[in-house]
Length: 217
Image (cartoon, rainbow, N blue to C red; front, side, top):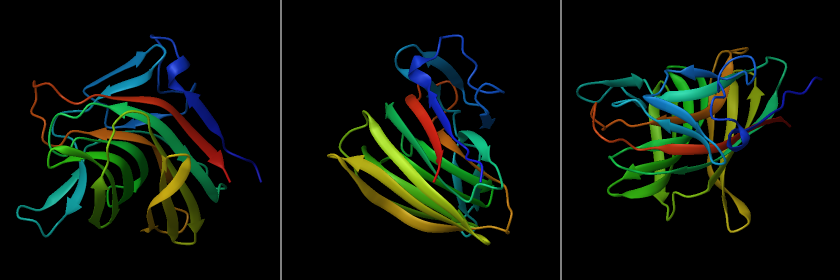
């Protein structure tokens, strides 16, 4: 079976490089407020003000937001098992500022995992959404060189997801969860950032993605 591999080193790209299109196969789920290539560092993204991925229809008022800035690529249907990873560094400004990996089926079925600002400090965080969002997180000490990986496998109408973070030379599990889909549903993976509480025109968080690696397993 044919493999599907992408090893995109943003840090080695020129300042005028186009991050989307045929050269990378990447596209935006909602373009960000600002995006530029930082030579020797990576892809710098300033999320759109008020952007988020979050769905809880029982909240008052109901929350149904799929406006975050995801930079993703479609996984070919023949690929049954694969991994996606990235290294990022970020600043944090407002409550719920976030950045990390994205697994997207549609606006009702997705996973995001990475760093999120909660109660004045960074946290290692993941949200799995199957109609409604399920969030877990724990305190994290640094927003420099955060290393994340997700392994995914199509199992009929379930997309099995295992998300890990790298700490002290060891991969540690952050979350294992299913995304429920129709068999054969299109799946996209990549990186994401969002700034739910940032107001338009005010200083916002920034995240620099060093790379994006996708590998058939």
